[in-house]
Image (cartoon, rainbow, N blue to C red; front, side, top):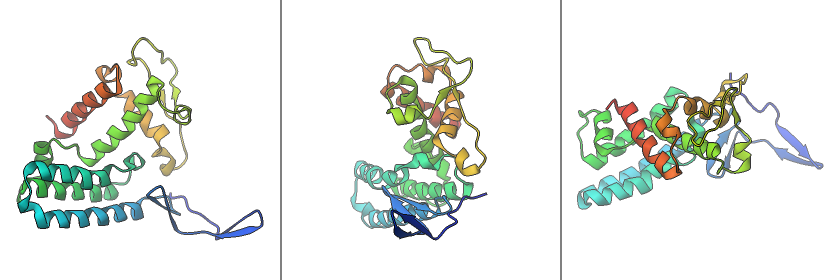
Length: 226
């Protein structure tokens, strides 16, 4: 069941404010139903426009140049605020994945017959779902290590029976229960769920840089079955 704004006007300090169906906040398009259909559509429009421009000049670019341009222009669109996409509906995730697949074909000059998963593996790219998990888990790691801002740390609590040693291996986080599907996609729910099933060698990383490196390898093997 989707949440929605059920009123047309707000009155604050005697001033009336009209309600909009969609607003943009820090580059994120938020609708009154709190889904990301508009945001994903806008992102894909911009990204596909960039891809068309790159396709026109692809034959003049070296492999290193196209790699740099795709990461700077394309993956930046996929990764921007992608922590918000945790557990989004499959049809939304598929739109983002199809876009990344198109970018992979551009970089590799592959035919439409070649499987997209093989192209992503060849390029050593994490698929969209893995990139979302990577972003969320990097935030949770900072929370566990105590380096995240207080407003983020206050969102998480240790599960009963969880305790701290010199490492983070034994730290389990508690995921709150919510009544709506939208709330269940929040960082405070998805973060603990993904963190708690990570293997110990990831949780025990002594720095964020090491954690991210190990996490990328872990997710790459998991999603590409290598």
